[in-house]
Image (tube, rainbow, N blue to C red; front, top):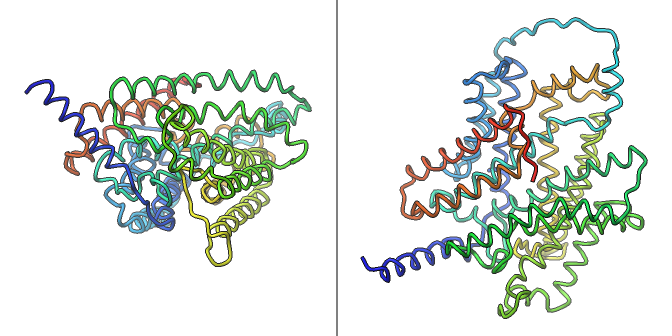
Amino acid sequence: MSRAAEAAIAASYKALKEDFVSNLTGGEIGEINYVTAVAPAAVVLWSVLQSRQSFFKPYTPLAFAVDFLLNVAAILLATTLYANSPILLNTSLLALAALVYVLPKQSAPKKVKLPPSKETKDAEANPLPKKQFLTTYRGTMMVITSIAILAVDFKIFPRRFAKVENWGTSLMDVGVGSFVFSAGVVAARPILKEKLAGKSTSLSTRLYRSIRHSLPLLVLGLIRLYSVKGLDYAEHVTEYGVHWNFFFTLGFLPPFLALFQSAFEYVPSYAGLAILLGIAYQAALEFTSLKAYILTAPRTDLLSQNREGVFSFFGYLAVFLAGQSTGMVVIPRTARKNLLLTLAAWSGVWILLFVLSTNYKYGLSLSVSRRLANLPYFLWIAAFNSTQILAFCAVETLFFPGLSKASPPNQKEEEEVYKASTSRVLEAFNRNGLFIFLVANLMTGAVNLTVPTLHVTDLEAMGILVGHAVVVTGLAVGLDIYDISIKL
């Protein structure tokens, strides 16, 4: 075969792949909720196994296998083989949990009660402890993201789960926003530390720190840009633009947040600022030519070529601020009943605002658009993630009440209880989340460059996806076992 013929075939396949992820309309929010509910359902089963049978202590190869099956494989099944029947998968997981729960509980060895020590003071002096439900939330988000970025290239992954072209909702659309929201949640920790220490950081220092944090992400964005263009990799231009990619969005968030912190003198609520920003951006879309420019303008210069990435950034900034608002609530040590009530209240607020923004009869009758990252999209992401965090918090409170104590016995015991009640797999994904996400992206690229993903059978696709999940999970857990943290 001549080089010209090979080039023509490659160009034809590239166009076919681009068409495969283009002009999609998504699916129903209800179905997305059923699919993503598999994660909390799997965590319920994991929690019953651990709290009733101490199944994951010690952490044997069998324990790792079951951990993987519950917290990784179940999510893979929900987005592929069980995509049309997620309720059946959820019901099966919860039925197994109920069965394990009624089995005789394994008796735990009695602990000798020690007198108060210096560790007690240390624990009480640490008002920002690690929270199991936050680790679980962020871990499951990283798992589904690492799976979906490859699964979307196979036909076994329903097209309604792939990113929507202009208007609508999909599983991957909520995944992108959830990544930003969860980053906002953990970004609240340094702010809380400053408040507790009674310190105030100057704008110049904040900018310096934020730029230092952003540089690795921007470099990754440039590497991805060069790789996509250099390898002639199939790309969906209307997702972010010709040159922009998700790493640039993540990279520009910290400096803008450093600038926005000055506004808290006038709007002391992160959620309030997020809502104001979302409304202001939506007003610009509705009352100027901005919406038409983003959706239909010719790509004649650098701005117009990357208009989706540039302007959707304001919507993602609102999402990030909403995540920070949630982090300010859930990270500090507080009474569990109050935390659950606060989370439930905020979930209700975000859901109500989303309904008001989209309802055609009583609201603004707006449509969700990830491409624009408009007001309904921002509110949907905030509502979804707040509810997910509430669900994981409720599971933790139910099965591991020792973690919800406002004043733990001592720091060492608190750490032991945290480790015993947290999935090793989800802890590992949470610990090196951004690095694992990068590796998953590289593996996705390698598969797409070597495998004709549109022409493989469902069985072959599942084999590749399971192998991908095993490698990514093995890397994450391996790094955790050797106590390696890679911060990007």
